[in-house]
Length: 506
Image 1 (cartoon, rainbow, N blue to C red):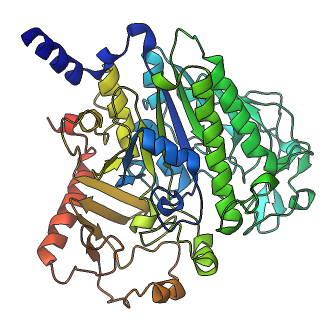
Image 2 (image 1 turned 90 degrees about the vertical axis):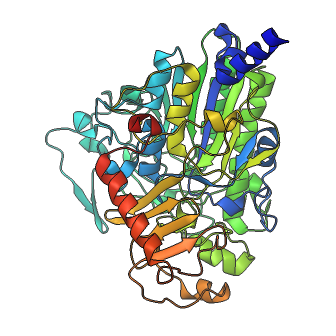
Image 3 (image 1 turned 30 degrees about the horizontal axis):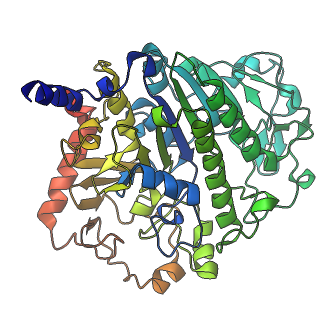
């Protein structure tokens, strides 16, 4: 009995020992784009969108109700996830069309770490972290005015050249995608080259009619027969192929699958029309769920499901179209939160967060612990016995003690940011909006009136107790000035010291 007790203690202390050396678990991260917490039916009993495959994933794993991205927009959240470092220590905005990489060459990334531990690594889908497009731009190229923007035409680049400083330069062995669905070039990129040279200017008139909202596509080069409706089916096929290819492989895989959906343009394929009661956006979410289902099925059919960690989450909250959707269909994508994409209210960064970890997470469980996508890096480092250097993953907390049930929380604090000098700090149940408002995407009085929000009190900051007020309705700043002072000081401290990871505080 004593020997058995020691063995069990060892297994709890080192979960990797649950897996044979030759069977290190695969890792699949399914990363949605602009998806609301309240869009998943398992999280919102009033959701008008069925999400059967993600609901089933949650039933097979652990669902976090208090999971967060680092930012309310695309690029920063991806950067934070892949580095274990708050984006705001380095930048705030997105990479624009033909923008440079946000990574410093010396910055250790999650795929680089996993490669060192013997993983094959791939990114399929949305990248949105930049490339060195100048390396393939012709010296004589000149930008041309297209509407309100200046853009590069198809003739401005040598498409036969490799595009440096993309996914392959930062730890991925393989990439396939269109980098960003609504940014040029409108072409497939495989590894570091386009598969077909763009030959015309982007023209939305060539495409089938959009189903909700606007195209929101930036001008630039396009392959003449490019069809944005092909993006999700093609990416899904590539994801399924990648998974099945690793059946029987001696090396585990890490696949970061970046969905372009339900980000605008909202273009569900015809077979998904009417599958929900939330309009085309709802149908687009349904198609995203279907894509997840196809990849989860590929894991089952290839015999890898019991040896694959699956994570589903999203980069930020839903886009502003959610206001009209709420009015028309009575479906609030960010429910039960206030705010949307870009906002530093909860709706901007409080996202779906599901982890299925065979042999580790108990099926059908729910955790209310505060967790962040920034924590993935330290979690996998802890699990695989990788010693993180001091200049890496500076804000990452290992979730392993939480996943194994040794503790009921691993972090008390998280800092949210979308724009420079506009922060929200979470500490315990308290959230301080360090500014007059948490809206950065614009306030909608009609929505606030319909949901019975009080009028602004014009205080210089906002303070909320999420345990009692998850919808952030009652500003308590004037009632708790000592708490405001405490959180302001903590925000300054974490920003100035350059880290928040527990291992660096020792």
